[in-house]
Amino acid sequence: MRHIEGSSPEPEVLPVSTISSPIYLDHAATTPVRPEVAAAMSASLAEDFGNPSSGHAWGRRARGRLETARASVAAALGVTSDRVLFTRGGTESDNLAVLGRVRHALEKGATPHVVTSAVEHPAVLEAAERAVEEGGRHTLIGFRDGAFDLDALEETLRDDRPCLVSCMWVNNETGLVLPIGEIASLCRGSGVPLHSDAVQAVGKIPVDWAEAPADLLTITGHKIYGPKGTGALIVRDFRTLRPLHFGGGQERGLRPGTEDVAGAAGLAEAVRLAVAETPAESARLGALRDAVETGLLARIPGARVNAGSLPRAPHILSLGIPGADSDTLLAALDAAGIAASGGSACASGSSAPSGTLAALYPGDGAAALRLSFGRLSRSLDAGPVVRAVAEAVGRTRSLGSLALS
View 1 (cartoon, rainbow, N blue to C red):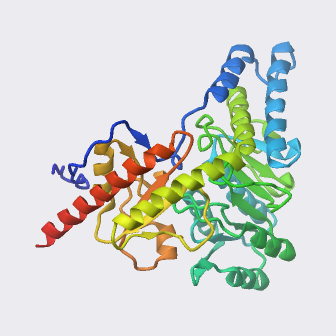
View 2 (view 1 turned 180 degrees about the vertical axis):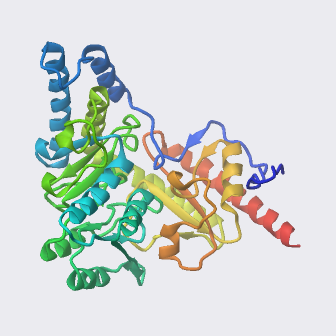
View 3 (view 1 turned 90 degrees about the vertical axis):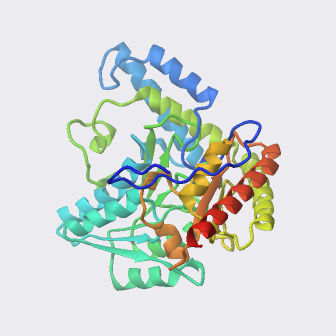
């Protein structure tokens, strides 16, 4: 095993039987652009080169395409088009939701207090910590008896009036579905705005603004077969946000800069298709995930399903595997032709334990393996995946035993 001074050792690549054709099981990290989305973007790139802010015919054409995309996103999510703010992706939308509220509070002379779940994406958690650097506070709400602690949230809302509560709809590492309806009810009762990162929810479970009305909702394109670098923030009241970028009046002055019309067209088509196909795709992916889950639990002694007793979205299977090493396991699967992850791709390369798994399983040392399913996943892949993962785990555990002997 090669080791360069000052770097982390590379994981041992264990010989695991190669599967007949590569299998992509990292849809929670990113997805391929689907043909319909590429076609919508290609048409826009060919026809809409004008600046949407220009008053001539070319500009009006681009503006028309942009507003059509905005209306399409809005219709799919059950909101009006004047609530849709285009951004460059989920991270920017999360940052704008949190820090936009923080800056509004500071402008009003208040001490910003941000409340988040303990399993949020780093885009939310790090933005909330920035609020602390600016003189504010950040409160984490954890889990009790395996479930999100609604009592702790209610107590926090009662004792203080935060400027924002941020709780994701579906956790990106485990597929855990947070009780957004109940969280929204508590926030509404306290008059505190709620932000929800719905990046892993759209296209996997029903997401309807009217059913669980958050004040701010984050979506992104590349998790639903749209282009990278596209996203949106759904905003109930634009008056309560302040911008992070400056230099123009586009997107209500909250996201200045010439709009990416082709990107908006691609995002809109991706959202439209994902929402329309949710019932059928959710059922298909849930059955495939359950088949793989059942097979792996039968073949890997001691393995557990992370958040297995809680409501989960159908596209993510997260396993805790005692006696194994995540990096070595992933390297073995990659060599066999299977793409998987240990958790969030946004935290890859970090040796720190997952904040999500630490919140759910304090002090636990099990290796994490995330298999996430999507349009590239087929039912006939279940058997080869189960065999390859079980073999890789066995070899990883054997290597660990040899290292200790």
